[in-house]
Amino acid sequence: MTGAPVSAPLALGALPEPRPGRLFLGQLRRDLALAVRQPAEIANPLAFFVLVITLFPLGVSPERETLAPLAPGVLWIAALLATLLGLEALFRRDRDDGTLEQLVLRAQPLYLAVLARMLAHWLVTGLPLTLLAPVLGGLLALPAEARWPLTAGLALGTPILVLLGGVGAALTVGLRAGGLLLALLILPLYVPVLILGVSAAELAVVRIDVAGVLAWLGAGLALAVTAAPFAIAGALRIGVEAG
Amino acid sequence: MKIPEFLRRLWHRLGSPRWFYETTASWLPWFAVLGGLLVGTGTVWGLAFAPPDYLQGNSFRIIYVHVPSAILAQSCYLLMAVCGVVLLVWRMKLADMVLAAAAPVGASFTFLALATGSIWGRPTWGTWWEWDARVTSMLILLFLYFGLIGLRRAIERPESAGRACAILAIVGVINIPIIKYSVDWWLTLHQPSTFTLTEKPAMPASMWVPLLLNVIGFYLLFGLMVLQRARVEILERERRTQWVQALTARLTGAPLPDGDGAEQAA
Image 1 (cartoon, each protein chain N blue to C red):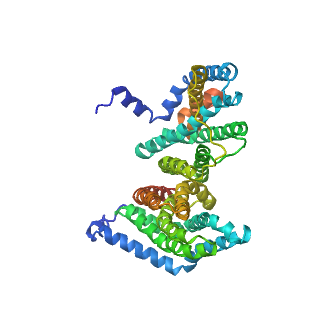
Image 2: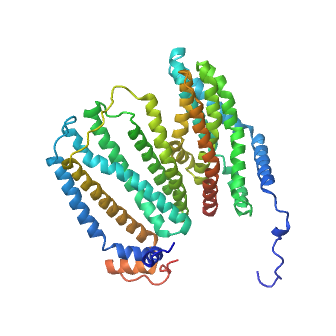
Image 3: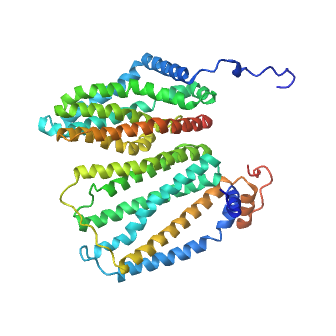
């Protein structure tokens, strides 16, 4: 390093500072493009979701009377496991090719990049699950009055699952036995979402107003959106340092 | 706000694991003797001399173990979250050592609370396991402890493991009230009618004084366990420093290894 004249350090300051909004959109576009080019990564959790739901009538009973009361719980647990399945790959590729390191080193807040990453992940996993749920509810004899509360619950709940799961995925990024550990770290934290989501559907069946439950899920989502990216960003920094 | 001088000095001293190790050596007997006396008195009093409950007879006596364990199970998680904040904000090594030391102890108390609760449930509710709100929250707490222990085991570099555990402990402590609330609420939806336990009558002093003694005693014994484990953790992590090598040399009578292993404490 001696001898050569110290050139002006790569003039980061001279580059135009991307505005937060553009940064967010750019990250989102990149992550969506990557996801679309790996259709298997989108399709596998969905196929898993459909398969688990197909197994239930086979394992429990095909009778409508038996299936109907189980349907909200089965749909939610299947959605939860499908989300969990997709989480392991959330940061893996970015870590392996060094993108993650660049994100951490970048001067712009990691928070925004993480938020965009999570949104992209939800758009390709949580959203399709939510849209499929009313259809699959039909397979499980889900009562008609529970269909929309269940879907609304999933629409609000799956982003929470993705965000909380992101914390676990970031903490276990780069660990060899990450998958099982991830389940152990994250599933206990999913309990409130599961309870509220299933209750929305169950309350609708007995014709109780579900707005309150959905409002709670919304509150949870607001908390998760504001707080979880900080934890994810912190965990990613640790993961990069450890790597 | 003015921070008292002695607190400020204590805070700075806590930055040195060596100071902590040497200072706490004299605390251990106090924790052991006081904790042992309190738990001994409370337990003998509670098991042999407190009057039986008019509804539950003698089976209520398990509360003298159950309640302190349950309280500690939760306090311990809170302690770990506080250590987590201290570690992330001030990068205090000692906080990580206490965090590492406390997790298995907390998990044990959680398990003890669940096990004693289950044994108590058998004669009282007529079943070993009931999806009661507090039982369910405790079970989830146990899984949170397992997660923390598992995460620490999985990450090889101790510094990274410590900070990852700190984040997880903080996320967990934010979630515990939410989990507790949601489980309570879930049970009001599904409350089985068979086991409505009537509100317990206010306890007479002869029942609650031994319980109080046991709670304080359990805290002291918990302190003893965490201190002892933290001290071992300190020795292990600082094993390359001169003071630990001098200490082991003094204890074992072995000569000091020359130079290369003994680095200065970073």
